[in-house]
Length: 359
Ligand SMILES: Nc1ncnc2c1ncn2[C@@H]1O[C@H](COP(=O)(O)OP(=O)(O)OP(=O)(O)O)[C@@H](O)[C@H]1O
Ligand SMILES: [Mg+2]
Image (spheres, rainbow, N blue to C red):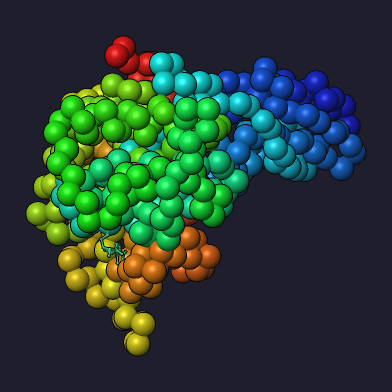
């Protein structure tokens, strides 16, 4: 085929086996190629992606260019422009939540930074254009209201709880409902019910992602979640010490037991970069989580160093600033993008995992 003879239909044919990351279906079949222009100086394609795919837009754009390069005559100049595509979230029966992906953020032990990572991940996804909800499933010790800096009673409308809105995120937490310091004794069934209520009785609207901040360790909440709705997968946060890694392995096993796919591991508090001399200190050792993840065949999503600013922002209710600071935003954007890649891959590998469990 000579370059001048290149037709629009050739480009369309070349794109026929290029899949949308969200659905895994051909972008041609799903009408996500609004225009193809073929001129003497090359090919220009517009590819429409949903806000769900925000964190991996550049990667998909690069893949698409590569895909066309390998199928079109050598030397053809190729441009791919990404534009918006809207695909509504399907409602999840029986709770009626309209969400594309639900991600649980857990850990084997407490205090490793789950809530910090969960909230920062929610902001990272939102910054890429996605509509994000954040559910604080830590009913014993809710910390989301504190770290995102909002405390207000949720409104009730049409018999449904309205999520609390902050920085464009939709939030729900026991911390909004119960007064601070109130003694709460949750027995198993109440814990189960309160989580199901926060999931199903909240008017979340339409979400690309619902991030669930899990309480440490316990499998009860994981069981409740897995029984309530299809979960895209879990992210396990750990610190690099050997003992913490053992806990992470336990958390991975716990998610596995309740059939929640593993999206990957995040190593938090990986190292300390001294602001005074720029030297790196591996306070808890470093790289252990990456090695452990490889050993277990689980994706490694990224690392976050110990950063005094991250702790200060958490205490001040300004976790959103983790994404406006160039340094810290890189860590969380990487984790968000790797996590979305992981969801895409997991769907391809285990399509049956996304089917709805029977209640
Ligand atoms: N990378 C980091 N650098 C500095 N401080 C951090 C980092 N990650 C978390 N922290 C701080 O560590 C403390 C514990 O973090 P966080 O509350 O997110 O942990 P958690 O795993 O959710 O805890 P819990 O098990 O109690 O729910 C907080 O004060 C938080 O600000
Ligand atoms: Mg927490």
